[in-house]
Length: 438
Image 1 (cartoon, rainbow, N blue to C red):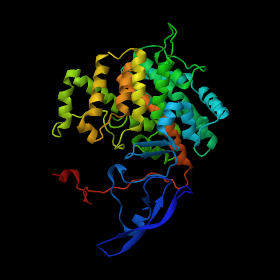
Image 2 (tube, rainbow, N blue to C red; image 1 turned 120 degrees about the vertical axis):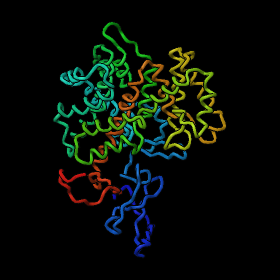
Image 3 (cartoon, rainbow, N blue to C red; image 1 turned 90 degrees about the vertical axis):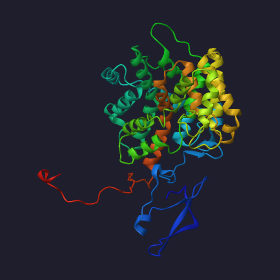
Image 4 (spheres, rainbow, N blue to C red; image 1 turned 60 degrees about the vertical axis):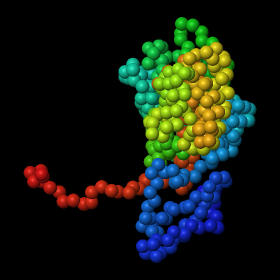
């Protein structure tokens, strides 16, 4: 137990009906949210494990970074509401906040931006890695490979017990992930890599590396740069989700930070996690036209029909996804900026949004459009292919993974992850020689 958490005067008593014995387990309180039962001595005291597939009722760690209240639709980074940060701050502000716990002052922010900016270039030999991938490789496959390989080039930041090494590794990953992602995109197109520009802001630089070519100057739209910045902020962290838990579990073994982030990228790649906004676009393609919406809404309401409306509702948020409010506004700003309000697919999406917000079936069940619904539309409007959607998610989430990894390394109560199991396989059997097997 750390100084941040505390035991309450309460205990929970477990009675073993088989033996009649009772066991008391302490209750711990955080700063906000439900109390937790400390069952670290459960097996030693009782001989039992708990069974919790997906760990949906299990706190795997103690954290001060991100708080979610799904029932109330609340998401806080270090205590700050996501809506306030997305509308009034920028991504570098949020990166500093997640890493260090406080918003930076002017001097701190200037130094942080400088330090990150001057790590954005990749070692030139890393660029040769891309040639080893097929041109039609999925960008997430490229991301996993290149990020994992960074440890072969930056030996001066691999000692996880050295705070300075951890800081340098953290800055390097925040700085280099957009470069790696943009180069994965350019490689798939057969276009030359665009090197980072130190005079550009983080999101501006990312857009420039994605869309610029040596043939002509690329003019960065302030509206699109702001939209990208908000997208990065909204996806920067989300508590102990699958990819973050993967980063922590990998890190618990003492693995180097680059390997841990590569593991997080691999977990994010799954369609149930990072691929939700891509599924939204696939669904819109399936619906095809506004006139088909009533038919598909009817299918969505039929519990015997396998069709589901993607981008509505959320596993955690039982109310409106707080990120979706910001993304909704940003989505309309981007469509107006690009003059794409008459695009058939985007018109379809906006009509579907309107129906979902007004239809009694969706309202009663709180199946509101979520952040993935709007982000998919924005990416589509900006000309980003669906294969890159999860890559952009990885760019945004890297700082959250790093903050969580740093917290895990510094936590004195952290142990190597070792979940238990309920074994249902064969019990011990006698070995049968090959000639006697039936």
